[in-house]
Image 1 (cartoon, one colour):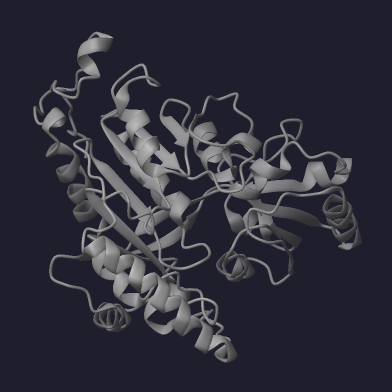
Image 2 (image 1 turned 120 degrees about the horizontal axis):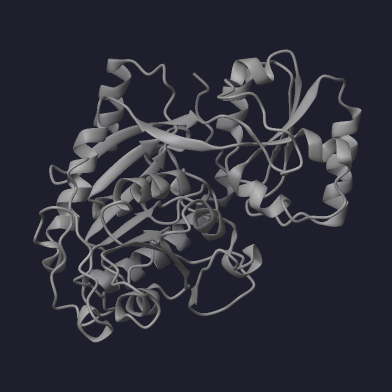
Length: 396
């Protein structure tokens, strides 16, 4: 097992104490009702974390999209980190990545049929989505991406993600560690998911983790692991790889340049190392925008590797690399994307799905559950929020 990725700067612990005072005071204002929270009749599911850095939010949001999209009109609302636009923005398949941010752009490209919007002010974003002014059909559920600390919204279902390799119970507050708020912030979660778990975890290790997380009876705990999908070429002029290529057949015996601009690439590094020992990481910061000097370094680093060789990058990096200029023909031919999804462990998928679907069904507008049917009402009626929709989850 790869072990613990936590690195603490003990010299900064006094500053973490002061940071904790500020965050704790803010949370207290919400608990006392001095700072107001907004709740909504439309189901709102928040997916987030209390740490800085990647815990696997995007693949977990995509799991929820896949679970719901064939049955209800689902929307994703994100902050749109590092986007060049401001305010509320509805995504279209033609909206450039720079206006949305890499993660919302990735989701809109993968799921063009769903609503994707960005707004740093989540209350305004939700109100715009349910107002009917921006959507052709009424939104049945909203997925909030990375909004655990955005406490002005009170989601109907709060999902907290915890990286197995950076368990919050062992971490410290910023700046000594990577916690955005004290560990007791986990108490707000309805569901806690320990992500990026090694597939080799045994029953005793699951029991130890469950005890360490120390959740309340009202909270549900799940464990997920990363599932790697077949590699695909980033650029359309590259011939398709063989049908359903397994990672062993593609990576075995090759030198792999692992090109990442994400918060936590170590898990991918260790996983790919199981297929070939020749992994050469080239790492940039999270959400990194690749500049001319970066492209030059990528070309030179790849050229220096002995053949046979490939470049492997993530889906999030791919959306930022797709339109850059200056990649050599050899680099373009050799650049492959490694899509990931998540799998539930301990047969938790069915229980998790039931929890999500049960919450969506309780919404007043979604209370009539029969054969799937889109009652496409007139604009005035279906945006009033008082109508009922007929929604089926028979396949789940």
